Amino acid sequence: MWVACLDMEGVLVPEIWVNVAESTGIAELRFTTREICDYDELMTHRMRVLYEHGLKLSDIQRVIAKMQPYDGAVEFLAWLQERGEVLILSDTFIQFARPLITQLGNPTILCHSLVVKDDRIVDYQVRLSDQKRAAVRAFQGLNYQTVAVGDSYNDLTMLRAADIGVLFRPPSQVAAEHPQLPVRYDYESLRELIQCRMNELQDPTAVVRSS
Image 1: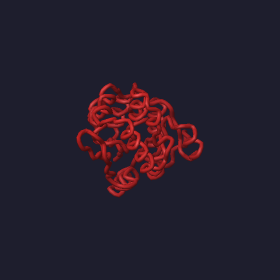
Image 2 (image 1 turned 120 degrees about the vertical axis):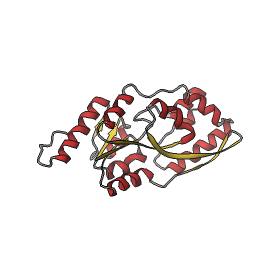
Image 3 (image 1 turned 45 degrees about the vertical axis):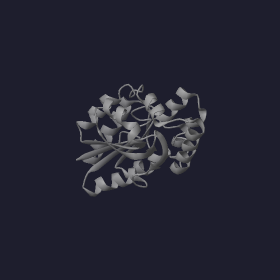
Image 4 (image 1 turned 135 degrees about the vertical axis):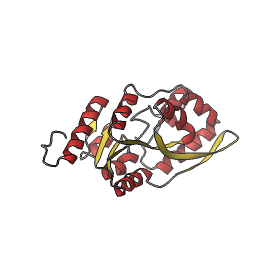
């Protein structure tokens, strides 16, 4: 039995904070886990910028309401669901994720929560430190084989823990720093790699055909 654990932003949908930065013209909100690996540092920066510019949760949600999944993302999820369970593991927040998850067909998502007062984001609550890796290990403990796909620094522990871990459209720096992880840039080649690795794990005598 297989469980696929996928990051959301950068893998299935565009980066939310980048879209907010482009919509508001606030360049300081463009930073994501693709550039800053310390999540607390990144969120502290974001909350400071939101406060300085008076941006509210509803302002961000209006931007998200206009976003759509990447072309091919829904079909890719459907392909994975034919082969096992699919779980979205994201460092976004449930207050952001709902409309995007609906467009993706409502797969299960595990993510964090915002603390909101009078429409202002005042804090955030992390579900669990390194939750992505913890989830993969938990499924393996239940005798599942695991596929993990991510694009950023915060996905690396999940990718290393999984039976099949793949970087999808990562920044060049992330790919260069972690050459042991295979990289793919489109859903078709990602499907081919995952299927090949699945076949190899099910038949250890199979000739390795991917890298």
